[in-house]
Each structure stands twice: as structure tokens, then as C-alpha cells.
Length: 247
Length: 259
Image (cartoon, rainbow over all chains, first blue to last red):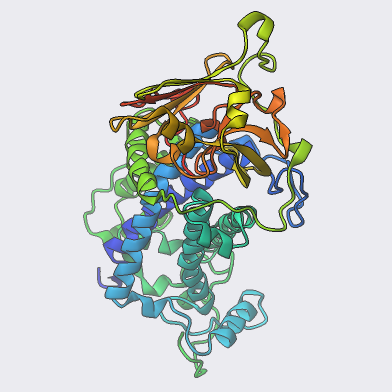
């Protein structure tokens, strides 16, 4: 295929889909565990910072069936998540892929230009490398929030044996709260990611399965924003003439 | 419908309507891959317990986690609730497995006594007065429930190491079973957790003798174990060469239940 190139290495593709399964099970079982006590307050106290205290998560969003089942899944799947994450991070470090993911100088103004483009305040797609500035920030944030989820998780798994870690987060109650926030951020990043994949670059789905990707169908080539220019060959914007830095 | 033309580029021209083919992927392969991923997720979603075949894997993970938890256990790691944490007081939850609050009725069962037996040189039988006369240990401690809540209380009683010393525990004793008169409730522990300095045979909470709702006359309590491991309404402490499971451990909760 002349116009196609491998966009994602097999290790990136495999760890991506393993992560989808592991995160789904971790979040579902985590919510089931949370439902056993859907609040943060220490007994006899009131918790300041969660407006839905004692209101359980809808059952259909949970996984594991009951508390023990959910705990067994959570404590088994956490190792899949951790090992998968380490394999991914080691790979992108050793293979140089991190260069496409770490924010660079100008990331703020580049992101601003992407936002302007998405809200149609700018006509042509900013120039980009493998990812645009907003993607770069999201894909950089994902492993960081993942690490936050793992570390806060360790703190609530072992608040006595790993007391210094738990205390660094403000104690067990707060560590549990930060663990919940890490989950919320992971859900937020994933939801936005999936939304953008389907509304801006559905042609990238095969690139995460077979690795193949056609640059002539990239959002930049199609001048695509959410729901706009989804089909190829409808490009209306003029070719890039500005000297905007490639992110 | 099968497309006879093997040339992927040509195929793209013939059938521009199908995303997979337009992208040069075999339709079957696309569907198979998408189907497998969706199937895995659907399987996870439709049966909320997860696939039955996974149970063995979960048991395996639990056994490996126990190795890690045992390695993490330190007798020098002590629980200390945050300074500003309020004591739960009357908000401390009450919990038992019998239909009604288990109450030891001396008229029916005679005077309550705690038995320390099994692999010991001198089995003990201690009344509440005997317990109260032994060296007293008290800590302000977090209670970590498996459900996720914590509660702060001051626990007073006798360190289990003190009872173990008095009973003369034999070297082969690797486990301890804590039994109760709350129906058939019991939980067995590893000896290392049982001999943690904050593992107490508690007879008073927040300065008062335990009431029936909190496990009177005595219970075991240690912050290194989740709530369900800490048997209330205690009758026997048995030192054993092998683990004997427990009420919740036999029903799917982790046997180790460390904190």
C-alpha cells in the first residue's frame, strides 16, 4: 500500500487494547467497591468535598457482582494494568516515541490554535506532527493520571504498612478521595478521546488495530473538526502557507 | 457478499461505502477484530460477576498478593490516626452475623471465659476479670472496614503477644484462629499479624467496657487486618499449624485481609 505507513508499533497497539480491558474492569470493580460505602467521611465526621455522599453509583456501571467479587477482580487486574503500563512506558522511552508525546515549547499557543480551529474561530487546521497539541497533552496526561491512580491505590490498599505514602496524601480518607479523582480523570480523558476518534479521525481506528494509516486521510489533510469533513475529499481550506511550528 | 477483485486499491474504488474496505482492511478481519474487542467488553458487562473461568485466575492472584502482603508486614509499622481525626464514638458501626445482637447469658452458658489453646504449653482460661488484671495496652486506632470506611476509636485490652507469652506458644504454631459465640463466626490469621504489637484482645472501647453491639465481652482488634478479620464476641484463641479459613474468607473475601 503506497499511501499507507505503520502508524503504531505492535507493542503500542497491544498495550492500548490491554489497557482498554484492564481499565474498564478496574473502573467497574472500583465503582462496585465504592458502592459498599459510597462516601468519603470518616465515621462520625462530615466530608467537605464530595456532593454525592452516600449516593451509590448505578449498578449497571459496576463490575464484580458484589464487594468480594469486585475486590478480587480489582486486586488481580491491578497487576495487568501496572505491568502493561510499565511495558508501554519502557517501550516509548527506548523506542523514542516519547518525543511525539511530551509537551514541547509552544504547546500552550499550539493548543490554543487547535481550540480556535475546533470552535471555528480559525479556518485551517494547524500544522502538526504525529499528534496535534491537544492530543499531545492528553496522551501525556494519561500515563501520569494512571500513575496517580496506582500510587493512590497503593495508599488505600496498605494505609498501615505504607503509612508514609498514605500520610503524604493527607491520610486514608484523602487518599481514597484522590484515588476517586484519578478514576474520574481517566474516564474524562477516555471519553473525550473516544469522542474525538469517532467525530474527527475515525480513520485512526485501524491504525490502532493493524497499524496502517493513510496520511491523506488525516484530520490535517481533511481539515477536520468534530463532525466536519468526516469524509475524505471534501477539503475546502487552502493549503498551509503559514509558518506555524509543527508540534 | 464476497468481492472477487484481490487488488485492495481496486476494492476501495468498488465499495467506497464501507469504512473498513476504504481503508484497505479486509472486511472479515476488521469485523473479527472489532468483534473480539467488543465481545470481551460485552462479556465483562453482561455477567456482572465476570466469566466463571476467571475464578481460578483470581484465586491465583489472591495467593500472589498474599505473598506481597506478608512481605510488607512490619511489626514496626504502627497505625496512628491523623491528629485532627474525630473519634467515631456512638457512630461506630455495629455488626454481627447472628439474627440478633449476640449476648452472652451467664444464666444459660455460665460465666464467660476466653480460652487460649492449641499449640501452647499452658492452655489458658481467662474470665473478664482475669483479662482486666493482665498488663493493659491501649491505642487510639483507625478501624479499616473492607467496605471502605474508617472509624477512630481508642481500644484497650491485652496485647496478644502477652497472652501468647503466658500460654507458651510452640514454635510450630503458624496460624491463630479467633472463634466467637456470634453463630459460627471465626477468622484465622497468620501468626506474624497476630503478634503485631497493636494486635489486642480488646475489652474496652473509648474508656468503657465493650457493649454488646461492639463485641462484648471481648474481641480481637488489630489495625493490620481489615475489620472482618477481627472476630468479636470472642470465645477461643487457638494456635494452629495450619490455617482454618474464616466466616468471610470462606465466602469469597481475601483470607489475608491485611492493611
